[in-house]
Length: 420
Image (cartoon, rainbow, N blue to C red; front, side):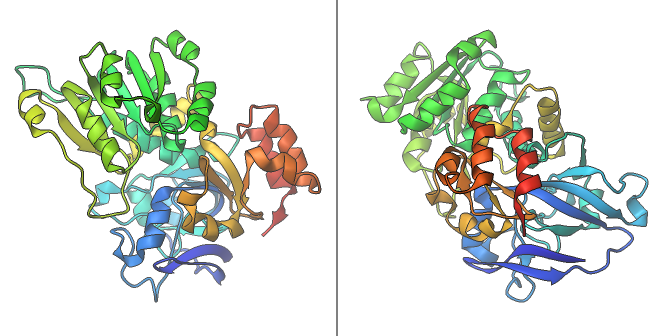
């Protein structure tokens, strides 16, 4: 079977190509990808090429497929896995296969599996690691977003606290405690707010900061303090650029005691150090944002490490259980990852979007891999729809849903967009 896919050959060398997939082996699965959301991790891999820990050294000879937040449909199942999977099943994939003891992952390390492709071969290692997950939802985009949501879920679970006088690590954010999400109104920050408000273990106070009023306003419209109050959480948004002493202001919001859990959503030295400065006793600083610079550093107050038992944790991706939790919460309607999406496009938009991702404002960029379409903001569909019926109809659909992507929008796009 022929596939069209974006492959990485080296630093900033991404190519959209068409090539033949080999026949699947008895322990492999042939699948069609439908959707993939572009992650900042793919941008980092594109910049670093084979210097990236997950990207092989020989990509200049054997290029690998990029994209790791994807969902699709199974087309053919090798004999080994026919007891568990079947033709026509929808699927999502957890790319972080930590239990294999290797950093290899779909979207970085393999020649025939990645999210930015029309068709792929899922290798045996994915099923052996229990990372091919059945998905029963009607829309595909939530399954794509279950991977970034699993990263958020995993980060919340990885935070920990130690009751005084013990050596017991109690995993998870402090229930009913003070929590801050710094630089927290980007796409992943929105997902973290959603999860903080709607999972079983919630903070009592949630403070979300940024330095962009428009992004803060959008977050406050999506997750209002009034709604948070109904969930038992006091939610406060703060533009730290407009506060004379941000550390004092943020600590004052807690009554001066500081924060039990602080999440850092931007790899910026002053943000990290601000997070350290607002920690309370036994406070946990969770460095969520992955830097592109391997020499990234920030100062940490070790006096407080010694006397106030502050501590630091970092996670890179979630595990399969985190992804299952994400899918379950979506299925129950408790979280809606569609709030992350601000742009949609086709497979031919992937190269430019991935390479320039930090310069493209907004949230998640969602790709439908079997169509040809430039990347377009959901907020600009109206102006682009003046002489384009597809955009005009999509505008009508998203506008009535507060510019949030939906099953109706996905169905219309897949039925009417130009195939690639």
